[in-house]
Length: 165
Image (cartoon, rainbow, N blue to C red; front, side, top):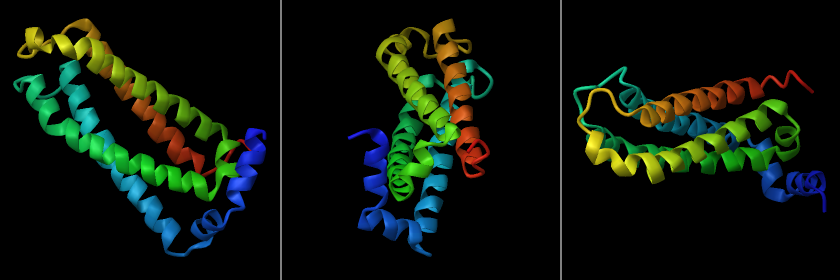
């Protein structure tokens, strides 16, 4: 079964049709997705701005991450869950949209950047936690994160206009 056949089958399931045609459920899922995105990306941006040194340089990075990352992960989980439901409602339309594809690649890269940051860079944070200007690799991870999340936001927003079909 090709991906296109899988998406056709998925789109023709009862629940996909029910979500897509609902006057209440689809807008509720979409609203949840947008609010979760705002919370998650907003909190991640605060951490990134601290890493880059543009804001909150008087606050330890460990304090910023300890307080914000759990809430960002909660928002991210809610965002992914609602995003999967939105995809489930219109898998053919989404999968064939170049902006959706760009968004998914940027989301994957943002996840890899976060994994790399926490697995390799942040492990040594005790040595640079209180510095106003953090090491280059940490600043770079923050810049890459902000850039990728901007791509996710812009391509996700433009996806609704379906310009390239």
